[in-house]
Image (tube, rainbow, N blue to C red):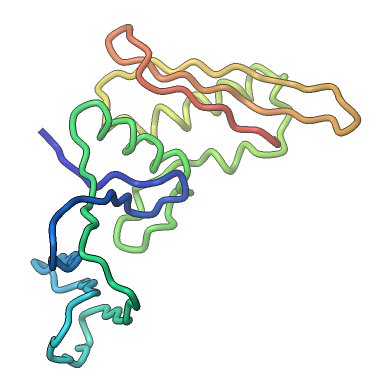
Length: 172
């Protein structure tokens, strides 16, 4: 079963307070030596960056060692993976150009056109096909007739007949 870090709506790693004392936060992806983020470590030895790494260092004042990263698994992990795919334009991630979706290509098109809705459905299905085997995707147009004409889409993703994820994208 997959496990991942839980993210906030803005894509930041989610923390919660705990009662541990004197435990620093440390996030390392060392197998490829690509990233190492550490903070709150007192009396640490500064290390110089190499050509193959990213180094982020900063000092935290009034440090409290009572934060812990929240992890997710199961359906919550699948839902978060879907959110990341749909919010990330295809090709934006340098080391993983296959991660993301083409949803942005449908912006400013006439979503009342069934061909455009079908295109959006294919973009979503393609983006999540390696997360869910044979997902069922339903896309509905939403139009708000106010002073500022506004259109959007509702996206519903089903897995084995059960609703797994839904979202509304406004401003199209």
